[in-house]
Length: 311
Length: 263
Image (cartoon, rainbow over all chains, first blue to last red; front, top):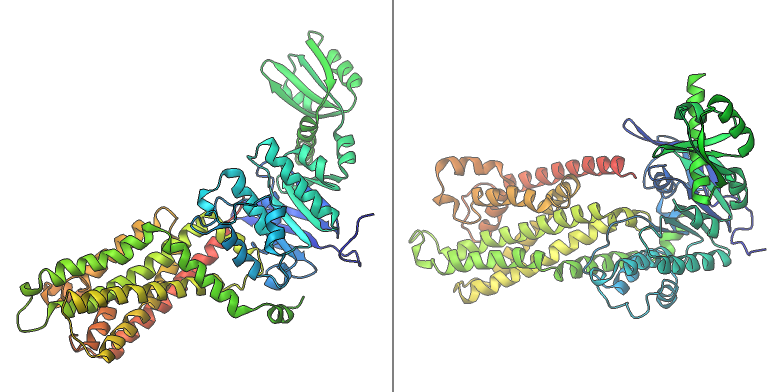
């Protein structure tokens, strides 16, 4: 059992039927979800799914078009609500003509009980770079400065918006270590990622979102079980829409002249395919890997929505 | 933690002081800011005020003294426009401002820091120019006049910082310097900041009434008794209205920015 910071178990961050529209674009279409104390939650979805908007709603950076966002039970638009949170956002740059320690010094001053600078430097792997101007750092080092800025207020809840995008495998491991350390201290973490592997490795719970909606939610094991299945490849004259609509098919796509199906059980689907298209050839069946399972799950939800519209 | 408890636990004056300090350091280390804003007015003063000392309208006024008032105003105006306008546009474009808003930063701190930085750079600008005027320009003024002139000129950073704020919210990080140059250079010229307004054609002299930098330059000249004799209250009223209009413009830009940031 991990230590928890808040004993009453109330959510540290919560979206209640939150909607965010930008003109005609709906970035978040009614999301309900909560991060509980001590929990590491991964918001997983493809680019443009609404992950960043969800984080911005929780940090009070944008106002919901409908519904509400709460941070430690308060409106996140009030600075006092953000005292116990730290955020690593997807930002291009921070001012380049200030030193690493100067950036930390300023951001730490916003918090009533900041983490000592030495601890922040160590946790983010920035030892020896304190006096370096931000503009003189490499890509991986810059990313670690952003991580340090998220840590410096000693947050109980850490927001990490795509922290490892564009990082090499080695730097990614460093980040994962840092996140695991926070989790081990009983802090809550809300991580967005489009890598299922990352969500699987770090999160207690995965919330899968696509097109501004939650499509699945559960422990990594549950998500994988839901998506677990087989991949069927074949050459067929059947139209993609037709095979995608078959019972038991989570997702379908074209790969050159071949058709790829993601299915729960392969045999009933193959029987049905052969019945409809006796000329079917180049049949191949194998287990789907995690990324494919993820694609199948997000794709399956889209299919359901289309069917709802048709019905 | 309540908002009250928060303000008790933090040292607000320290936050504002750090914000101003780092705004200052940030620009001081940026030659692209320091060189044009500080060096240009000084070079202009040397070229037009000192080198052409004896070409001016004889008997009416001393050119080095006159241009001390107008180049000082021009320099401070540019410090404020570029410091706030470009600085804000760049930090907004980079997402840095968004990150800062995700912290419990006092919401006005970055603006207060930037304004303090403008006032500080304005003071440095004026000090350097006055040193040049007193030496190379051979200008002799009573200490109280030097101080009044500096006070008026540095205070003039405020309306142009407000205008810079508006530009910072409406222009992109790459277009902001061009937008500011396109506005400030013709406005400075038409306001008599580069050459005495009396030497301008009638059309320019009439149009100058509509330019805030003209009123700023006149207030500055007034300290030396070299203005055109219009009431100071009118100049102040125009600059106050200009500041207010800029703030409103900036507010709409801020609202627009808030609606747009997504990903």
